[in-house]
Length: 384
Image (tube, rainbow, N blue to C red; front, side):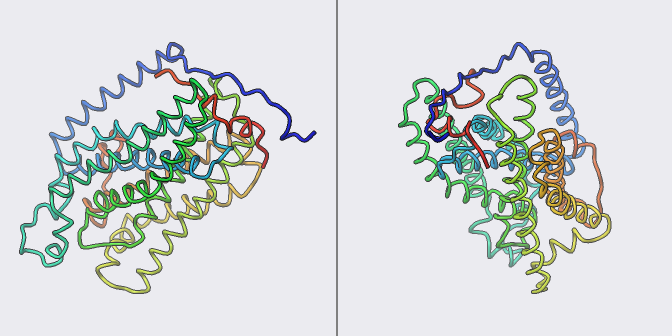
């Protein structure tokens, strides 16, 4: 009898015990309150610096949550088996998009410090006038609300059906999640791309890139998979997610490697095409970031985001050692933060790095894994 034909009982669900971590929760809550107070002080003292620091922190966490939503969608769209045991953590993080909606409010309130095009009246800039149908305040705020409604709605529905299946094991939930995933895939692609256009490319309305959406997506997908490795390992060390094996880590490591390569491919393609064409409207973005003190940070990003992780993750042994893989995952998350920093802050400081303390200060009862998903047993048998 083959291994696949043998009957393997599904494990019982395991539930997070908040009482075990009440001290840590209280400490984090206190830190959050102190951080918000300091943010308020920063907003009163230096609004331009605070605005860009807030946008940097916001877009960093926004890309992480969107990346987790992407992996949840892909799981259902491809009918994946390996990711069943780690999917609940992706669902939980993706649902934080609703919380991020509140943290987007300061961007809308302080918009005049961030987006130059909002301060230029019609008729003063021919380039801006040609883009007014898209770059106007009413359409901008409408799109911002729409991104969170669409992305948050997809995340909410996928998690709702996933949790419902935990209770009764109804296979129709799997069918519904697959339908939502197929509808959510183009929604995700469009919403993330246009959010990147609005909040990042919109910092310089004179510049544009036809590869900006894929570039932001590549960073979001790779860093969110790294975040999943860290969250999964932390839960396993706390006594949860024993269903996760080294085979699951192996696959997560391979995805980290794949998106390190993809990020580098998109980034190099964008840079090479603009360097070759040498059109001032296109090259101005890179001229600023390749000048003076931004140049070392740009080089650190290239080496640290691609060459380092690429060389390390090629080794199979690293991908099957959770502690070592966590070091690489933490480094990729740091590189994602550096990437967002290099995208946002040069619009404020021009050709030189000016570190600010504000840049760094801004940074329910369900099973920890789906217990009645019909693909759970196959996920437990994973070999690759």
